Length: 354
Image 1 (spheres, rainbow, N blue to C red):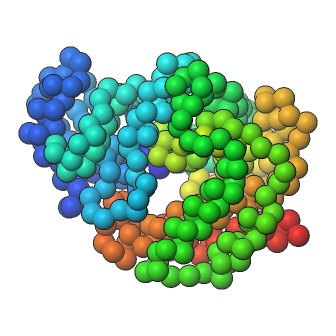
Image 2: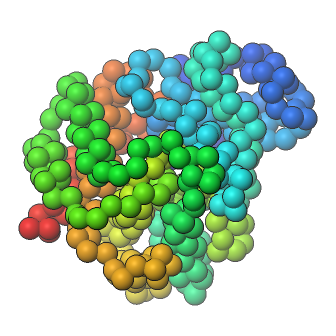
């Protein structure tokens, strides 16, 4: 949910409660960032509902900083150290990620751990219909997104030093258990009948077969920086939910855009795909299968139900943080309000499996 890139950067003044000690950061960067020179200017990106994200500018260049949010957080959440690790590992391959410039694991500099990465110049599309792209070019942009997922899922995670980045196998069972636990534990955010039904249904309906790859966990068009003029992905952002997992969970999350209302996150629900010259959901699935040499994907609606459930659980957590007063994004209240619709969409996909 980042907001990086040359266009639509979406920066604001640093919000109250998320201020950064400029002098402390300037000193740290002078000691840890190659060729850095101050003084430092700081703005905050509007996105980053989970991990606050900042744009840094100095005479030596422009940078991006991501940090854990202040206040009480759930165990294992907001793991900026993991983001930095996976991006650094993928940076040793040809996969498109920003270059990690420095990581601070301590609380002593800014109060929470953080990392600094390069600022990648390009375009971010906040609308999944790609309205700023010519009609004849849209299939190529969807092909670029599709290819990016297929490339990620082909990376040898052992070879890049990520063999211990997650537990291989039983990904869906573990993820369903994790998000169910977080949903049920956040009593302040309340309960929802659709979510309660999914907590019971999902673990009993996991499709057979197992695979393990690196998974991004939140791969949408607005988490990608595209080339300024070409249908090419220059960088994939926001790796907080990445782990070792099942590639079909990752791909179906990306393809969930076809059923996603556009006011929640970039989605194509009710869009006229033919008029827009956008591949259909089936064509998009077939393209991924061709790129990954699959015969097809059975039980597709399970994967959609799982991903709507997982996203609903994340928004449920945002709702809880709004109630507790430590949500890091100005848009957090809107995300909290969207939670019930996501739960209904997860329930619809669950019922489609019956």
